[in-house]
Amino acid sequence: MKGSGFGSDRKPSGDRWNRDSEAGKLLKQLLENGDIDPTDPPKLVYDSYPIFQQYDLSKFRAALNKMKAEMGCNVRVRKGDGDDDNGVSGTIGYVGGNPGNVNGGGGYASSREPEEVEEKQCWKPIHTVFEWTDRELRDRITVVVLMPSGINQHDYSLAVVGGGTRLELCVTWPEMMVDSEKLHEPFKKKMEALKLGLTGVFQDYLTRVQQFQLHINEMERRMDRLESKCSIELPNQVHAHHIETNAFGRSDTGTRVLYVNLMRECSDSNKQKGTDFFII
Image 1: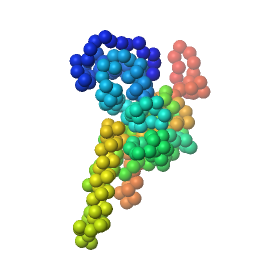
Image 2: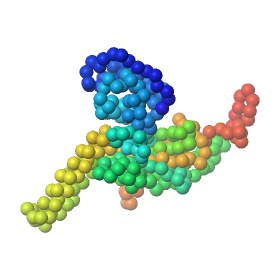
Image 3: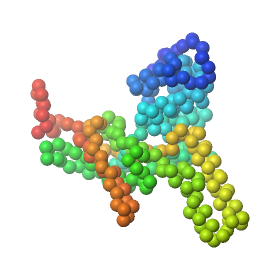
Image 4: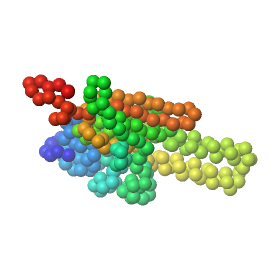
């Protein structure tokens, strides 16, 4: 996060966050300009700009996370985010992995400390990366990622980040993972078929359903959006805005892959210097 210095002597019009207020407009501007990095902990941002301290930290955190989500920043709990009261911080989210080094992130809620769960819950999909040269002699990089089941075209976002060095993929959790009734429906049908109503087995089923719903409610309270992210380090720098994607699937095996074509940035080895330059 860049330096602060914005302050305000104005009193809040109420304790409800207003995105059209001076504080709301400033927050959007800081995110757009990069003065606030999406990975900055909410409490750090809150403490650095006095104007935000008109509001409770919890209300500011919720507003920050919502604005990040609307601007394409995906919210997840991060290891070592530095927020004293275990607030949620955000990271710009979209696709990724590299041939041998994947750093991922996933949404979760647990009684464990966030850093303990982070190691177990990060999303590390099967993937591969290869390089090739197209018919116009442009260097290309292709990434193939095995997608989770239950993910459709509107359930994921993809982008090149890190100055063209990483591909990031963010996926929304499918309904079966967040709806307690749908998740436990197979157990219910089995008990009905075996006529296990009003037994100890049925009581265990009800307890699990109720506890899972409480678990999901806690996750939604902490995260705003239930989604996971993976990050793929690319072997060479690519154009951030030149992304071609194809999603393929097979009905016989249930396999779904995301096929991503990227274009490598021009380098000293593939451009001619002069008043103009062209790829050679």
